[in-house]
Amino acid sequence: KEDIITLAIESSCDETSVSVLKNGREVLSNIINSQIEQHKKFGGVVPEVASRKHIENINGVISEALEKAEVSFSDITHVGVTYGPGLVGALLVGLSAAKAIAFAREIPLNGVNHIEGHVYANFIEHKELEPPFICLIVSGGHTHLVYMKDYGQYEVLGKTRDDAAGEAFDKVARALGLGYPGGPQIDKLAKEGNSDAIQFPKAYLEEGSYDFSFSGLKSAVLNYLNSQKMKGLDIQVADVAASFQKSVVEILTEKTIKCALEKGVNRVVLAGGVAANSGLRSYLQGECGKNNIDLKYPSLTLCTDNAAMIGCVAYYDYVRGLRSNLDLNAIPSLKI
Ligand code: KG4
Ligand code: ZN
Image 1 (cartoon, rainbow, N blue to C red):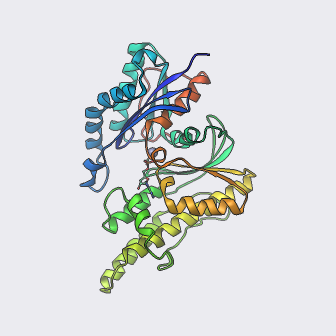
Image 2: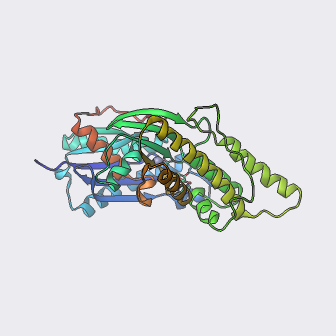
Image 3: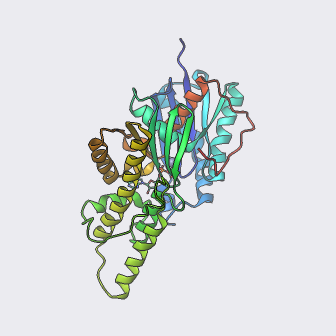
């Protein structure tokens, strides 16, 4: 049987990434060109700046990915590309490049949902992993608790009603003067702080709900910081980071475990940028262990945005016979 070579492109936010994969799970190259430096001074991603940077970067990143993988355009079986959710201008850059390659080479195009990509990062990391499992997807834009029954088959059991988990990390970090992106900085500081120093709220919502809400917690942190300032009291930044992170980690973990037990699924998979959080990894690992649940998560580079995870989805879609048309458009609010 001939190898299937996937060329994948990801440009939904502030990373221009291109990857080449062999038979879906073997990564031949995964080039990630991050724009973090360009957005830092604005305290977050500026959509127009992101689009322009993607345009500047895309051709170079494609060449680099092909070179590193030691393949040429003629070796590519099909092209995978993120078409949503994300910033529309950013998405369109990757999408246009992918369509151009598919058209010029007369090879199939597979549009990929970015959130699905985060889940599939685990298939690259863990070669034997197969569905079904419960997946907690926590990133800067999404917080979903999903039951993945089979490839391409998802049942969304819960999601955030307001801020995404990563968004809460970024906003709290900003209030603490930690800069962008805030998640990794809070993670680092939390290790030096006392997580019991301040009692921040955890929103459980109605009985039996698997939805999340982080805006109340975020406001509680902001209110705490303001009241300390008004009273002229010191702010122990590490303690605030640790206490905030503890609330997020506990609520994510408790709902995920409850969900797995109620669904009778003994495997949990973690995905998305916040899956890089060391507090979440270790607490969830411990709780899964107590409940005889197997936990899988990707290595750090596969947690945050990258094209390899997009290529993995594209591969499984391709082998199932799915194809996208060349008039595929970007869908900024695409749902899983
Ligand atoms: O998945 P991702 O790269 O982009 C989206 O699709 O949103 O996730 C980025 C998010 C940011 O909010 C960032 O602060 C958060 O993931 N993040 C972390 C950590 N590393 C990245 N949050 C907490 N702890 C971390 N170590
Ligand atoms: Zn992402």
